[in-house]
Image (cartoon, rainbow, N blue to C red):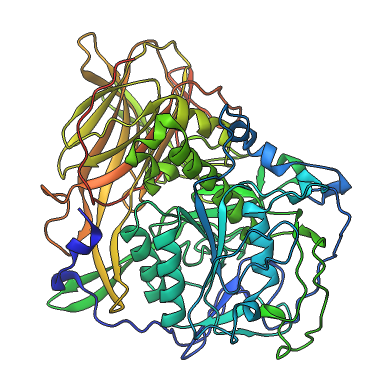
Length: 626
């Protein structure tokens, strides 16, 4: 079922004031002004858009991907991308389209970005031609996604994580604010509508490294972003979490919305195992619009959800430099001057979630490429669903130092199990992107069974599914192997809130959010679900994630339960014909990681949570026995 069939006046929002009034009260890198939206690019956390931006050092002979200690370091290899590159059919991003959507355009005059030839923007964006929108910040992000090494160049420095992707650029800025190399910019509904519509209609992955203050994800522009992702279910929207520091409720929109993959930043030198102090984090407010008799009332629950999904390196990085007087350095800005537009110039030591998000977007591009290229995936349309890609990235993630999702031991009578309502680490989400692990889950394991409401599915010990859940029902997945004690298991469930944006009329719809739960069970000798081992039962997240050592030998099962709706303005969400779709992935073979396990009856034990999403299409029940 397509999102366009869901529209009904009973859950249509009345016109929202999409330009908030008053100044933001959080970090100085975010501003909202009366009558316009003035947003911030999520790089350079120490800078304010009202202060001239200090030029980072341009190092045209740098041999490093990160600037730490001046050593050569390959971030792509650290993140496991080599596993895709070295497949018998090398996966570099071919057959996948990735669009960088932010204030300005990627400059295609750089030696690593000459292949960028498709640009999306509305006539009301800044300037009179595409070249007026070329921007340093967009160029930095673009190269990290899909820069291509030159014949005589240095691969480590030049190559983005998905060099084979069809990299495109979308711009939304009507103007920039502040001094030269401005991070603050304005936009309007038309510039957003054109860029988002073109990017999501034509792309497999969209990266957005910008944001504004909207802790509960309730602003009209956040609804537009979520609505576009919901409508285009095979386009994954990767966004920066923000650089507002270590306090709670600091993740900005669109990352504070409900249908994207929000990425925080890692520091800690070449280990990249520690969340950077500037990286925004949860707990985050939750909100929705209750619509009764055509009146929309905002309902907010403070500090109850995890908004960061994943982390990736976001400090000390090197990328393509652009210093021309366009975009955020146009001549109308204070202190603007031509800093050079040499095709072989690079900037070293850039930091911010603006740059961790493009790395994850590039990783997602490799996954989309594999889904479209490899025979074992290309015949299965479920392999390109954004909730499947998101789930896989989170199940494959490596735990970072101090990772903690608030799991506690729950005892009822003589039975104990672990439970979390937090699901994810407030700062690190599910952990650091690890494409080496993700490759196995995506390509070499179970590749979908199409679970239907109330179904029982026999599955291989690792893999993924795109399934459908019915309200008040559960779907079971029986793992086909008996396991020994202390066998590691990671599981992620992801789905979206039902929000829709009718682009043509700029009509927003707040429909429903399903509450799905994820649990792991030990089966009895008859193969029935007998003993609850662990559960992820967040109410307000749209991610559930478990990460544990199984406590005893035997056969195990996974259960996806559709308990209720957090809200439902439609009155029928989750019923027959409107089932909730989701992505589920699991891994029964990863080696345990030190420092993130809990003890259960003398056995090391742990878990973590992931996302949720709504229904659009029914699949077929399948059974796989390996």
